[in-house]
Image (tube, rainbow, N blue to C red; front, side, top):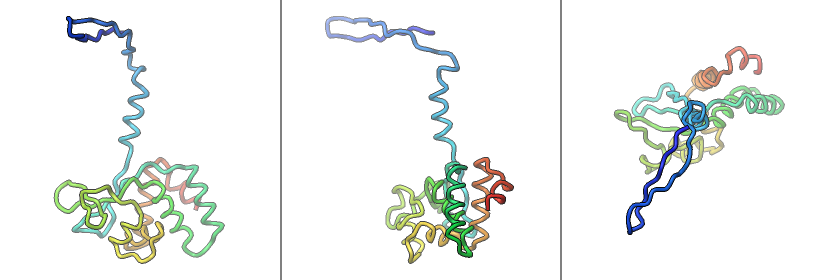
Length: 173
């Protein structure tokens, strides 16, 4: 442990006050380091077929618990596209933001008339920018990806990066 002092001036001279001991071992900073790691834990996935602008989605890791619930809900609802919708749901759940890169490395918002603003998610603003009529988040995901295969490929990248193997995801589906 290290002890440090804070020096203050009260106007009549300098006063020195002892603040106390501070833990300086590597283990003392685990909480702060964990927070830093979590803040840096994201994956940027380029949306295929988009050029000028290139479009990217920033994801946080997929929750395996959430994945199970989404799969069960979509499977029970049925329909021939339940698997596509389940993948879209997981992308929506894990989305930090959607942005464009036009020239260079600057990440631009896709909000209409607000390129320097906050990034969109799979929301009405992105739906408007894409010209998607139905503003449901799943419809916006499907509107952003030009083919279902591209959507599935991006979802598989997200699952693999999140530590959910392709085999686990296949078994769940």
